[in-house]
Image 1 (cartoon, rainbow, N blue to C red):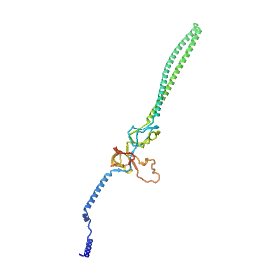
Image 2 (image 1 turned 180 degrees about the vertical axis):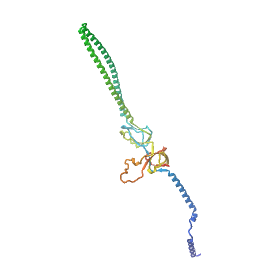
Image 3 (image 1 turned 90 degrees about the vertical axis):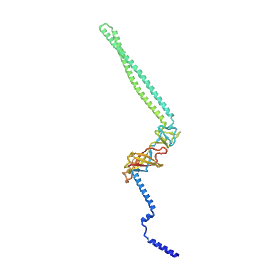
Image 4 (image 1 turned 135 degrees about the vertical axis):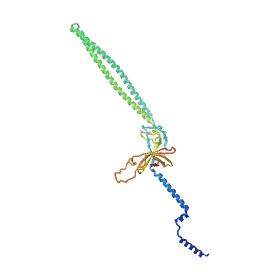
Length: 366
């Protein structure tokens, strides 16, 4: 066959192929049945998976605006002085009652000794006044006896003076005797007045001593209060942990001078929780006690569990330093965030967790 004939034959075949009707979709499926089967299976699996995921995820509310929170506080002494001991270091865990820092206590020991001496002086003053009161009671008893004696002598003098006067009137007695008895009567009257005045003075003396005793007792109470305060100040030289937690941002060092209220370190308690700022549109079915699953951004491979503790009665912006004033200016509605407190069932002990770390919680609300 010549080249010209071959070319003519190819041209005829191309014309015949062009004249054939196009293959149908069924024919194409039959030709590529394996590919179609795989695609259909993939679509079916994706549909079933998407449906299952939607059925599962619709019962949860999640937010990425969540973090770990704690009531961290500054540790400061109540008294001033030079720091003599800091037995802790940064990020160290301590238990309640452990020593965090110690201040030079020599001045405070001297203050305690001085206060004890003041208490002893006040107690001695009370004992002295009490002895005077006891002595004064003896003097009062003696004055009463003298008054009784003076009254008896006065009565006898009155009787003698009456008898002498009767004898003079009858002419049986002498005027000298009558004058003598009158003089004795006046002397006994003066003696009675003197003893009664001494008794009154003794009674007034006991009242004065009792007033001094009350003043001495008040001084003793004041001295005891000063002693208690001195003992407290001595105890304050030992700065201890109020609860278990971790020491962070340590600034106190041995040899530095600190004043009352000056921060020596920050303290993070062991009690920590999660604050999740959910949108207000996510709170319709959220209630305390609902289970929560969350992950920590620092440890994405670990899932932890907890539960909703409470929902703040108000948005976060209301309790901020400068709350929004929607009644002024042009108002633009913005979906607010409401803090939700989440407590954790069990924090893992093998990883470092602290306030400020970001988490992603999933709260089951249905």
